[in-house]
View (cartoon, rainbow, N blue to C red):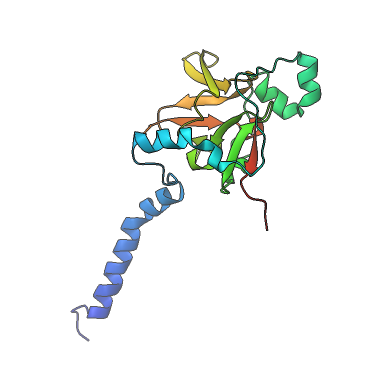
Length: 196
């Protein structure tokens, strides 16, 4: 029997080595960003044309119409987990929101007051277990500094009702490099089209 590898053996070995070399990249591919825009001009176009993601006839409030309610009114309006996040700046467990896996076309609105905050085209899979976005609908999100974990973080909230949404990080995809890490319970999703 010959010790020289046959073409078949060489091809099998090459395929095996290629598969082993590609394995880490395959893992990353499962957590990759969902094809965000390439340029800031494209991001700006997404921000300006966000209403194209609304279902026909959907009415949404304006960020200039503030919604201020008492704690008791908020408690009656929100489920306990949503109240904890939106009004007490709590955090839901990673992986607990079905909105992290939401892939339909549509708009993500504040669960407290229905102000549109993000579109489906602004969302990407960060692999963190929380819905993540690389930009926002301009004028609908406010920010502040948060020192709850000792080191400063940027907290962001709904511009209309002040409801806490999550924290902003600088590890998102290009071109913004931003990751708005959102609590799913602080959002509601309005699909552009109803299921057939």
